Image (spheres, rainbow, N blue to C red):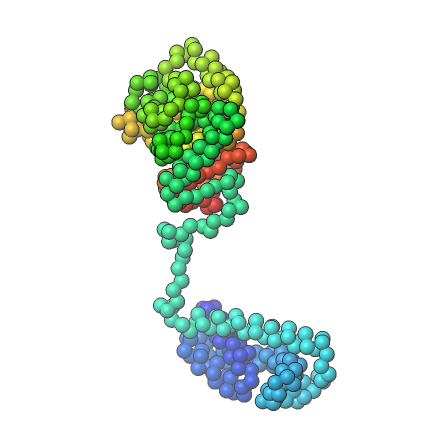
Length: 404
Ligand code: F6R
């Protein structure tokens, strides 16, 4: 009910304001015709047109008298004189000064503003809906909220392909190793397992084989190992690291440190302390490589892991075990616990890069990078590290900056 009324008022106002220079009966006729086409209420439109007329005259007069006079002076446009200003506003002072000029400009702006809304309204009222394509962006599955990089609390680099990211990180690693070699210092790397670092390890092997990068002075500490798996188990991280990296480079076996998954319960606590000591004795980790679990874990620091936690045994979260089920050939074969470096151990590295690929990681990456720091997502602790970065492919970065 209110819509046709509003439409009629806007049509009347538009005609009254926009066609203020036409004779009033002509304006009313126009208002009635437009209202008929726009299926409005003709008497309302005529009334609105009539009411708007005196309103439109004042700014128009000011425009004519002050701004128009100026324009006429400059362009000698006599035809602008078609309104008899003295008859309509007899008390008007004709002297042109700056104040009058400003009033003229302001009233013209006001007039245009007054016209704009009814015109836009008329447009929507008159044009049939089928010609107006309005799209609800939020219903479009490809829609993503606009990226606002200020929401990111960790430096993020996004690469078209994971190989590009891995190769950049491998180059960074090579530079670090070569620099440390040149000053007679060994390089301490913290390494991760899983799908994510595979391309990085390939790139390191390539640098070793074709570029002569030597790992003779490199010491490594791996993040974690499944409890119950010995080095011969095909799913052990010991096996993974040798197959995917150590067998292909010239690292000294004594420089490889991988937590053992088969330490007795009685010895495990001392073993974990010793792992921490070994890292310190090696001079601390120069560069820590990380992946991220779908639940936000780094290493196996499952939700609830304190920021200052150290190497310890931890029960594996359901998500973590589900994700490992395929490689183990069934969830029942996935160990229920692991030994892992703690968040505190990881955060003490001098530099760390977390890599993530694929759509499955997009949501948790966004939470870790833009959300609040909390023990629910241990990767969010990287926000507090002065030299941490995320290297992502476009898919893993696809939800960045969405409001959580
Ligand atoms: C493994 C590790 C884990 C993985 C994470 C992601 O050493 O530290 O935090 O990085 O579970 O696993 P992928 O790379 O298989 O998706």
